[in-house]
Amino acid sequence: MALADNSIPAQTDSPEARGYNRTRRWLEVADFAGGFAFLVILLVTGWSGTLRDLALKLAGQNYAFSVFLYLVLLIAIGKALGIGLDYYGFRLERRFKLSTQRFRSWLWDEVKGFLVGLVMATIVVELLYFTIRQWPQHWWLLAWALFMGLFVVLAQIAPVVLFPIFYKFEPLDNEDLRRRLVVLSERAGTRVRGVYRWKLSEKTKKANAALTGLGRTRRIILADTLLDNYAPEEIEAVLAHELGHHFHRHILKSIFVQAAITLCGFWAANWTLHYAVDQHMFVQLADFANLPLLVLVSTVLSFVLMPAMNAYSRFNERQADRYAFESIVSVEPFISSMNKLAEQNLAERVPSKWVEWFFHSHPAISRRVAAARAWGREHNPSPQ
Ligand SMILES: [Zn+2]
Figure 1 (tube, helix red, strand yellow):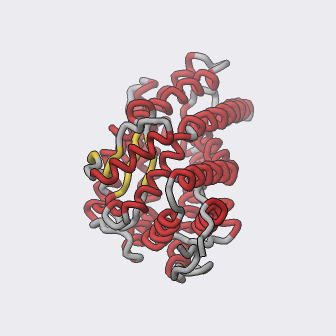
Figure 2 (cartoon, rainbow, N blue to C red; figure 1 turned 180 degrees about the vertical axis):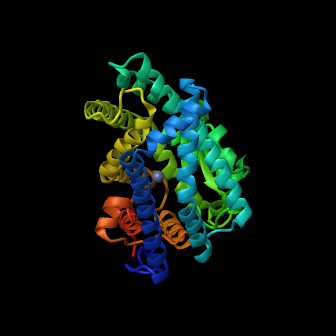
Figure 3 (cartoon, protein in one colour; figure 1 turned 45 degrees about the vertical axis):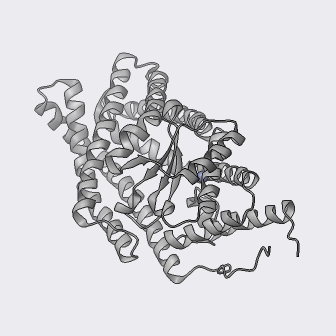
């Protein structure tokens, strides 16, 4: 079998793929810069204090309720300012013929996203200011522990509670694929509890697959846009990659990494709040008008750490890829699935170095394909 014969386009991307990805990146940067400016303006102008006073008045001076009202105001204003960019993102997907979603369906997703975000933010922020009020000395340690607890619960319930708000899922009914999965799972020494068909086609033409959940909710989800258009061997290669994540315990490891970073974040937040109080920006730590400052600390931290987090993610992806190479008979279906994915998702096969370094959670497709070819040459030399 020839290994490098086929008509796979070489090391270039179409102008279309380049244009699409460049605009998406600018959108991401604009979104970040806009959010950053919004928080700074709230603090510098004292408008955050105005919002706090309004919330306290509306809540009849009840602290917990006024925290909630303040949060509603903040998120609503933020959304109103950011909706233009969101809409532009939706138009971009339509312009490149990637989206299959109608405007109304998109708008409904926006509403649901807003409400889900509000519920989660309310839980986090109420807990935050509760701990600050009760334990002003060590609030950040306690808040960190609570926050991580929430994070684990969220990771566990996400596949059964959160994702179904936006997408439909159903157990995979395909005997051939099931059989392949059983063989792969036995090799991995595991029993993955479920494989689900993820109805992505209602929203997009793009394909995707993922390992999600913790414990009893651990599952592999495969987009219908992938299941319906890929050969069984190609789907098997994707499944093997996802099982690689499971085998190497990537979700658990990521939670530990997250825990360490969040601890630093809470320490930095505490330091910043104390500094702000010393500078008479706020009368006390529990003044919730300082929330934009807390968000700013976490924003800056995640921005600074983005290259490191993405490098860690790419490391995990390479590990899962290697696991897949070892599990499947030939690397060819893996290579063809990668090329199909790149085509279908309008991905850049060869992004510039710094773009990959800063933005990409997955290695560039050209690298993944090259790694597969190298593996194939080493382990299944072509009998030519
Ligand atoms: Zn992966």
